[in-house]
Length: 289
Image (cartoon, rainbow, N blue to C red):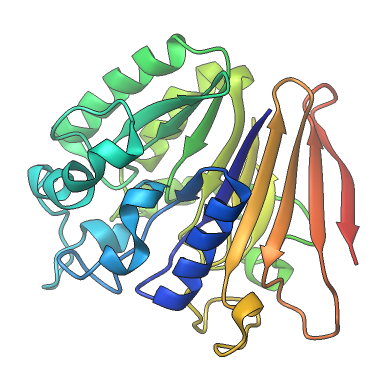
């Protein structure tokens, strides 16, 4: 069984991020961050997040220039900023200047993608992806953005108010000018759909459990507290600053996702869990108490 602690979109909220780091260390499991560590644009501080202690992919704010219109920063700079300084602590298979990597954990290949690049950089990533996914039996995919074909599942870990008006048209993939390669990555993953245990994402700042529709997807709400986030927290209450999902996977059997930390309620509710059954290819359990 593989266990991961998942966070995303910390946007320089140090306290909430450090709570997640401490929690992962106490549990003794890897912490994965699905992008947007900087507050707003490339060049801003990420050391607050102790990036050497986590496994992460880049988000749109991480790769964007400060000046408008937003542009994708040169990949060599991205690698030098986000990956080279922390290579020893992460122990991932990654080649300079790639902004993608993989790591094998408990018989499962963790594959981290850069969904923001395009052109020749995306072409290199697609070739790399085909090779690394062909070699593995099972994989977990990390991507800042979920496939635009995402089909939300109505449950305790989906913000229905947000997703009822989002991801309603797969054709929207072609309209997202700042991530033109997102549809290409989905197309590259599709032939290997039976290997994909789950795709972990962020970006939306609101929780969602759903289907790609060919594999399960978990989009976690942002750690940063903002108007897009649906998770209620008190900034001065330790247990409420962290927004993290514990992901437990028994390949070929089940995937269980537990909310640890803030859950978006103020009525005393204490826990949430959703379970996906790989054999029957459906969500089979939901707990909210």
